[in-house]
Length: 331
Image 1: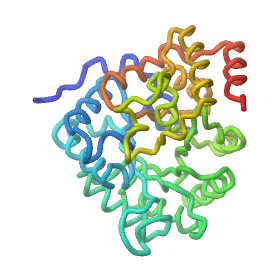
Image 2: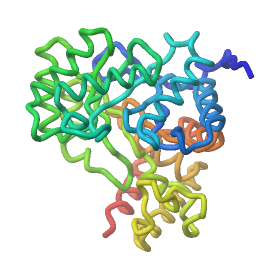
Image 3: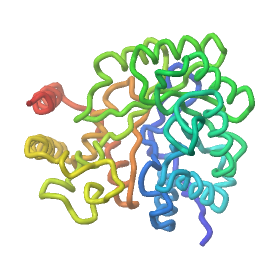
Image 4: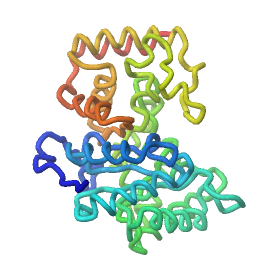
């Protein structure tokens, strides 16, 4: 079946400037961390990517280890890119990362120049592209000098294998130093990808302020706390849910009575806003102008469309924000 993108794909999407750069990202980006690997149904993955592009999602976020098995998400996206989206490459932002374990031996993870350069070369082959738009250092490496890790990112740009660079999962102080190094090298840090949700607000302590001062964009991953901030777990753990899968990151023991109580109360606020809980959780992140984009996953086109509908209401009253804070701060 031949894919032809919607002519109206840019009508409803909101695009935000990423930090102080010239690049705009969609307010909602598609992450391929889950549901796009070798263990997943390829045609379902394909339909989700089609639906994403049809609705103005231009940014597709990957990493070398996404799957499972590791590398398979890049391979599958590469197949879909070649068969369906090759003519639209200049309308796409494709990002990938390196930092977590990918192969045996001392050069298969962390932040050395050796690993980052080799991993990017492997990613380009799996994706079937000459360059990625954004290449990330996926995690801070306390045992490798930041000069070396940032130098490897700069090297990727100078080789023409990446247009922009970013970092992910870096603490605030390391982010500031990394940004200073990259600026001196002439390849400014475009973006930081931290874990951020209503249930995980660590970035609010000092990272968001650091990003704002450094002119770096922020793209939040796990905005639904691995599915906790949805209606899926309000009545227990469904058999087909992420928490029930042996290879998932959400574990059954994380769904405690206290967490369920918070989710149920938040769900009532979402209902009063004519939103699903997931929609409100995404909108709550986008209310902060320091957040460029929210990275959503999807196991179906319906789930993706539900996330996209969050853009219909991203404003909150002061009373709503106070009530949400009160709920989230409960012990």
